[in-house]
Amino acid sequence: MGRVTERRKVIRIRDGAVSTRPDTLVAEEPLEIRLGGKPLAITMRTPGDDFALAAGFLVSEGVLAERSDLQNIVYCAGATADGSNTYNVVDVRTTSGVVIPDITLERNVYTTSSCGLCGKASLDAVRTTARWPIDDTHGGDAPPVRLDPDLLAGLPDRLRAAQRVFDRTGGLHAAALFTEDGELLDVREDVGRHNAVDKLIGRALQNGSLPLSRAVLLVSGRASFELAQKAVMAGIPVLAAVSAPSSLAVDLAAETGLTLVGFLRGASMNVYAGEHRIALRATATQGGG
Image 1 (tube, rainbow, N blue to C red):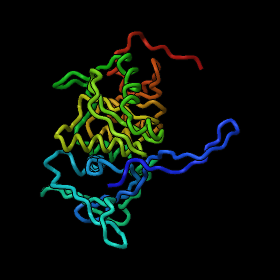
Image 2: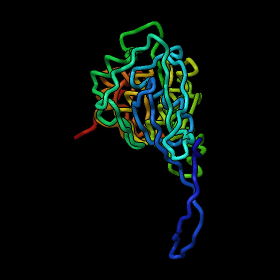
Image 3: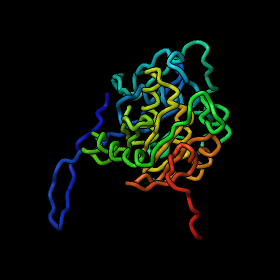
Image 4: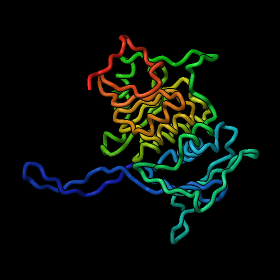
């Protein structure tokens, strides 16, 4: 297994003084995900929780939905001169009855650590493939998740406190799952924020916890369309980000009933969709143009 961090020599310049010292960097290595022995995707990730990453990726793709869908995940031999295992290739085997998508050269995807499957899916595709509807505005068996803004405001600090590798490198994104009462359920770090979310969702699948219908997903950085897609595919009703959402993420949230919160910093936040889950204390007023 590759290391999460690596040491490199760096020339440090501070107030004109030059020195040489070792620095701790976050590791970034490719992970090839195979499905039934056939190559499906390559993602640049921080080594660790690779099986959960692969499982979560396949939840987002609509292949896996329950723990019983997954037969096993194994490491495959990597492409090295001596035939040793690089631990950079995993093969996912599903149980009989699970529908496997048509894997073609056009379907194979390369995902970077920054953006994941940019532009791969459409709003209609996510809406039609999601297993667990999260639009609870029309009532249902359980009351909607309802969050106090003060509770949301405290989550970023709790996420930051749980980022162990970030403290050593300053170069990792993080994603965390919280209960509607603010209890931290799980946190994962990765050089790619989409990988951190996949690791969370994959672990939930392995633990038999899907759908995450009473959970809050908090991500460092921005809220892209892909992160909103992953939340919807895992049945998560609330996605919060410390930075801005994209326009397509807002469109997807509005289409599916996802509560989307952006710029969650201190006591300030913007609610872009699904405001019925936020316990607002005062009537919102429209600002001037």
